[in-house]
Length: 290
Image (cartoon, rainbow, N blue to C red; front, side, top):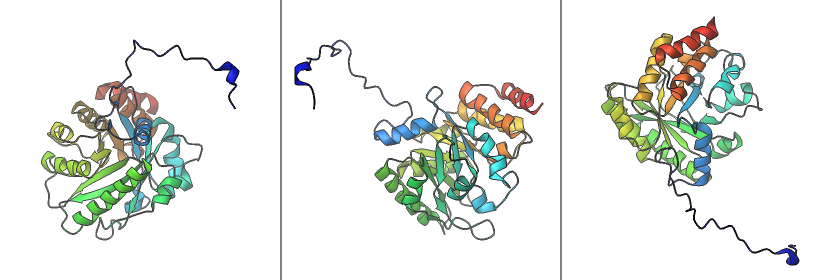
């Protein structure tokens, strides 16, 4: 119980200092609640406003693809150099040390593999995402695929409902139908559909006219690395995306399939957070490799 003999009247009310009502540093997040903002602040560097996400969720579609044969050997040592880890519950539980403090973007949908018809996914349970201490949850939407567009968007909307319930951001991972052109019009459409359905982050592909994709998406956009490129080309991809307004990268194969993954993730971070030109960042990669 408070000591009633020692109640002191307040005398430092800061009357000449207005309350700080400045907006949150990430676009589209100012009206979200504290929990979502806090988790987004763990994923996105507060100085640069960007993120380097390390994606290693490929195995739920591809199995032990090159570079992901042993997550414990190939991915776990890179964790401290990423801002966020994107993987499946099985690989995170089995292969990422529990003392890892990097935020996790949990792949929250699962379904078919590359051996069958793709994109027939379902969501894992909300209890799983919470038990994994997820800082964000990710699910795919397949825009332009007549067989799966409706179901994947419904999955995504349900995931956003769960995210809002527990204050966990949701990342929309865009896929487009195999008959659709890979251009800014369609990636812009897919990114906007994610945002319209409540995404806090959108992951999509860089293409010519990418500045329009970013401008029309009211939440942070990160780019997928896609297939393995020569190191300089991958750094140019990251640089061009950031230059167009992207808020970071979610790279996998261009890191873990590099002949020097540690050098590559450090080089990508130099582009994303320090604004290094691709040639400058390549020197980081070469130094680490050497």
